Amino acid sequence: MTEEVIFKIILHAGNARAEAYDALRAAQAGEFIKAAEHLQQAEEEVGAAHRVQADMIQQEAQGNKVELTLLTVHAQDHLMTAMSEKNLIESMIEMHKTIRQLSAKLEATSCQD
Image 1 (cartoon, rainbow, N blue to C red):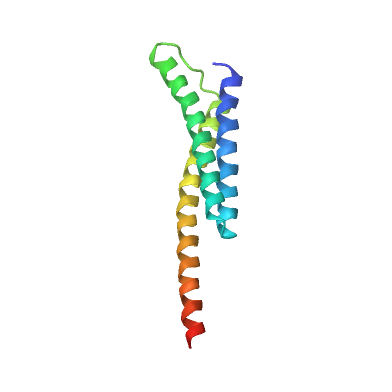
Image 2 (image 1 turned 180 degrees about the vertical axis):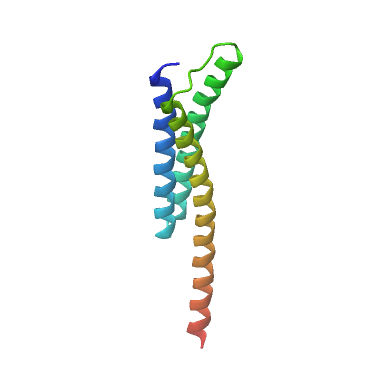
């Protein structure tokens, strides 16, 4: 297993995390379509990292031992963190949508008084 393969996981996981945070910033600005686009990109990056990870697992299952290095552990940690953060950010975006909807209703009610 080359370092290049391991760095692919780190690269894609980092890209996924960046896209997820871009989605959160877009949602905070009320740009939910843009947020959805960033989340889609994040999902694609997670998928790319996961495919590399699956290839590593498949290699090991075929009897080709994968050397467990600190870099490998770091890559796996990076991927799992990116996946967890993306999931949390998806929930946060839904909360932002709800807050905006409730705020709009509250404003509409206040204007009628």
